[in-house]
Structures are given as C-alpha cells and as structure tokens.
Length: 255
Image 1 (cartoon, one colour):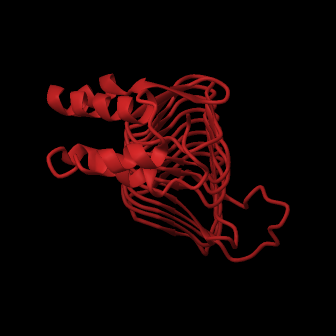
Image 2: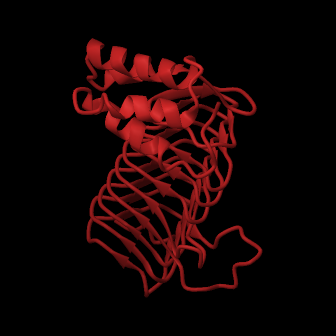
C-alpha cells in the first residue's frame, strides 16, 4: 500500500491499509489512521495525527511548522479528525505555543490552495473553496462555507452555517447562519439556501430571518437585540447558537 518511492520516517505510525503515493514524504511523529490515502508528492510533518478515511492530494503540505516569526521549534501539534479531503497544494500548519494545537474536525473539504494557519479550530462539514484562507487562531463553526478567494483575519470567529461569498475579507466575527460579502465583509442575509439543504424547516428559516432583522435592521443596539432574541430561544431553539455567539464575540460582529 506504500509506493516504494515514498519516504516514510521510521517514527511515523500508519494503519495497515493506508495508501501512500510515489514521492510522498511522511515525517516522524505523524500518525495516520485507517482508510487514509496520501497522494503523490504530498508532505506530512509532525507531530500530527490524522483520523480515519482522510484523503490528501498531491503537493499538499499537512502539519508543517507555523508561519509565525515567534515560533522557535517548540513542541506543538496538528489534530485532524475523520473523512476530510485536502486537495492539491492545500496547507495546514500545526499550532504555536499560544494554544499548542491546530484542530480540524470531520468531513471537511479543503479545495486547492486553501490555507489553515496555526492554532485554528475548524469544526465539521466545512467547505473551503479554492484559495480560501484562515489567519492564525481563527475558529470556524460547523457547516461553514468559504467561497473562492475569501479570507478570515486572525483571531476571528465564524459561527455555524455561515456563508462567506467569493473574495470576502472577514475582519470581525460572523454570527451563525449569516451570509456575508465584500471587503471588509458586511452582512447580506441569512444563508437560507444552505439551511434548506440541511433540513431546516420553512418556519425555522423564517425565525432566523426575523432574528437577523432584529440584529441588523431594527435599529437596536447589540445588547438590546441580544436581550430581545434571548426571550425567543425557548420556543425557537434554532436561535440558541445565534444568541450565544453574540455574547461570545471577541472582535465585535460584522455590521
């Protein structure tokens, strides 16, 4: 299952059925779970752990040292879950001493030339289209979609089910469910099409639209809108992560 032209460090740990293509390089302290496929010329460096059924395409770089001038080869790591796809020339760096780890969840698709920087936390079922980029310490919730050439400033958070349009530049936190566009990013609407595909009912989407209007179009201050929406959570549980996010935003939210 390992091409004889691949270079696998004796300190790497690979499940028995892992496939490794020609001229791939797998360094020490790399652990690769069952069902993974590592393409030709891919480079994996450790400490890094990949779960089951991940695909790494040619020329991807997974687990390299962080692109941070303060980094001095400290012992940091990368943790990747199951069923992820890293397409050609994708780069995922391990953490710095700030948190020590970069984390990628399950069932994510990172298309060609995407970049996940040091100390990022990526949830599950996210899609990063070609050239999408995460700065350091970015947090992505589940089901986030980043269209081509979109980018997120370091330390920003993007909530679950959010959508970043192509060429969008995110410099503030993006609440769950919100579609943003522009440079800098501005709220456009609720990601209704994405929510329909994920089984949200018409009533749930209507509730989220109303929440969006309360936050962005009512003229209420952030604290006032948050308080108003909090009273609706019990009867509209889909609002819970929306309201919770507003109370945890660290770089202020897109406005």
